[in-house]
Image (tube, rainbow, N blue to C red; front, side, top):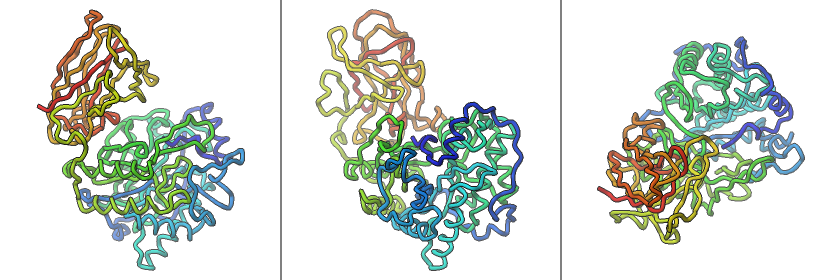
Length: 520
C-alpha cells in the first residue's frame, strides 16, 4: 500500500514531479559500488550464518528514513505532522545515529524477530541521501552489539522498486533492456556493498532480497532475474534468495505480497501486520483498518498459526516495524507502548516451536454454511466482499433481495468474492465441497468459478485461482435459477484476494441472492 508519493525529501519530490516526462532509461554505465564489501571471494563468506529453508524465521520491514535533527519524515512539506504514530523516544530518532540503531535492533530482537529488511530507496550514483547515509551507522551498531555478546538481528534487503520510476535522474527504468537490468542490479549491489557478509540474513548461504511492486518498471521480462543473479554471483561469490512480489515476471525463490497490515498475505513468504491508517499523509483517500486494541493483529497471527505445517510459510514478514506514516508499526511508540513488541514475541515463539493452533469459532462443527441476502443480519458462515475488483451493491430484483455486481474500477471483468468462515473450513488437505448459487438469469453473458486449490501449479499465485471448469451461460429468462458446483482438492486458505472462491462474470452484471456451501 505504501506509495512513492510518501517520500518527503525536497530533492526527491522534484525528481518525482518530472519523472513521467523523461524518456525511458536507454543508457547506463555501472558506477563504482559506494561501500567496501564488493568483489568478494568465496573464503570471505565463511562468516555467513544461514537459516535453513525448512526453518521458521521472522523478518520485518524496517524504515530508516527518519531524522529528528533535520525533521526528515517527521513533518510534511507544509509543516504539519507527518506521523500517525510517534516514537516513544523521539530524541535522537535518526538513521544517522548509531545509538538509535542499537536501541531499535535490541527491540527487534526482543520481539522475537530474526532479521530486518531495511526499506532501501537508493539510486545508483546518487549517494548523498538517507538510503546510503543510514547504512554505515547500522553496520557500526550491529558490530558493537555483537562485541557485547547481544546477537542482533541479521539484515536482508527490501528493495523499494518505486525508484524505477521515481529517482533523481527522472528516468523511467526499462528492465527489458541491458541498461535497465544494470540499474536494477546496481541498486541491489550498492546496498550489499555496505553490509558485511557476517550481517547477512541468508537462506542456505544466499542473502534475502524482497522486491516491492513490479508496476514501477516501464517494462520487464523474464530475463531480468537471471541477469541479476549472474552479476550478483560475480561480485558477491554467491546467489541471492530472491522473493518477488505478485506481478513480477521470471522465476524467483519465493512469492510474497505487500499488504499484510491490511490482512494476512499467505504465499510461500507470508506477511501480516497490526492494522493501517494513513490519515497524516497528504493527498490520500482515507483508509483505516482498525487495530481493535491489538485484536486485529492477534487474529492474523492465530489465523496464520492454524495453517497446516506442511504448507505453512517458513518465512513470515511483519508489516511493519516502524512505518509511522501509515500506522503499521509494531515498534515502541507513544500510542501503544511496547504492546505489539510483546504480542509479536508471544506468537513468534509459537511459530518457531511449530505450534499449530486448533480451529475455533461458531461453525467448527457445521456441515454447511450459507450466505443469504434476505438475512444478512444473522450470523452466516459465508461473507461476500464489496471491495477492490469485486464491488457489489445491495438491491432487490424479481421479488428477492440480492447483491449485484458493479463496474470494476480495475478492469472490465466483474467478480463476486466469497469467503468461508475459517472455523468451518480453512487450509485443509484436498477439501471437497458443493456450492449452490442462486442467481438472476439476465443482464450478463456467463460466469464460472475460480477457487483456492491445493495444487500450486493450478493457477497464478500458487493455485489461489484455479478454474472449476464449468461455464454457466445466461439464458435471459429473467428468472431466479440455481446451479450446484463441485469444488475438489480445495485448500480454501483465503488466498483468492482474501476470499476462498469467486464468480468470474463476463458480459454484464450478475445478481446473487443465496450461496450455500456443503462439505462432501
